[in-house]
Image (tube, rainbow, N blue to C red; front, side, top):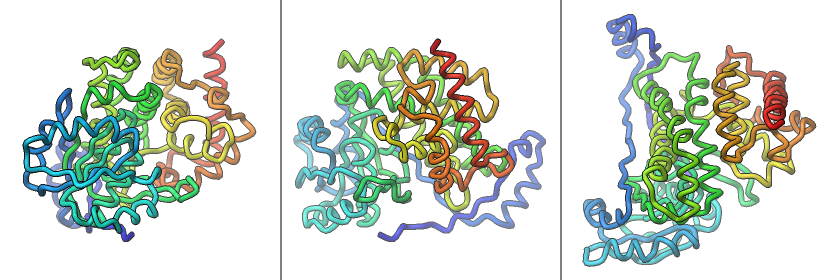
Length: 398
């Protein structure tokens, strides 16, 4: 269960250094403190019938694969995967349930299976927790990994991070594996996925831009995190422009341009950002105060009844409140309201009485550790921004 680490050392560079042309100063700074590092960006194939590309894409990695995933996910993808490899050298050894949650215990049980040991490649099929489990397994076994997301609710199929839970379902820690060698997004399977998962996925993806920008605002950014933060700025607009139509099309099991654009935004765009802005313990800009609201909600009775992305979308309004970005808060709040996403805490069955316990939980998270230190983020100010957001949202609903 040892986490594989690299010896990356980054120099942090300010955007204004580029604007002012202080290139020599930057080069000197980098020469003094930067060691080598690698960036592995995800590759992907999307569209109806894209599983036909499996043999060509995997040809350098082996001939045998074990499929690991969720039960429903595998039932939807199995025939398409088998059809995609028909007539090729690729052989599926077995289809195995991942265990139901992304825990080290489930991952280690898979690692101990003879069929998993025998397979040249691992095919991960399903949602975020199935993909996170398979990333752990592939990383520990040093096997090539190919992901087949069956829902557009998260970016787990392309990221180099796994969210690991305890057997009781509580959050344990982040694990940092290699990212998948390739991801196949079959549009017809996405169009047949549960509507509430796309709905929540849109809510989760709304956080990427504001969190990356907020979390990084006090640091001098070197090349890779700077690219990630800039890329985060294209993540919000497709959701607002295409989100409603994409959700309507998914309800009708219809593949459309809007659905594919939203799926790409949720799975690929946010995933690219994640891979570029996550390098703990050096820096971590992948999530911040919006996700703090989610982690805080896990200690409340009401929060347990609501989806991750649903709660994060309310957290976005809290972050924008904290930043006094009221115009953007108004825009996102109106979008949330049009989509049925929450705009105040009563929408997720949380009351002001829960705020203190939520803040205590938040102070134990990675997001809190990497918050901007001079931005005035304290337990008290976090509670206050939740209160202000709650009042704003309640007024919006009148």
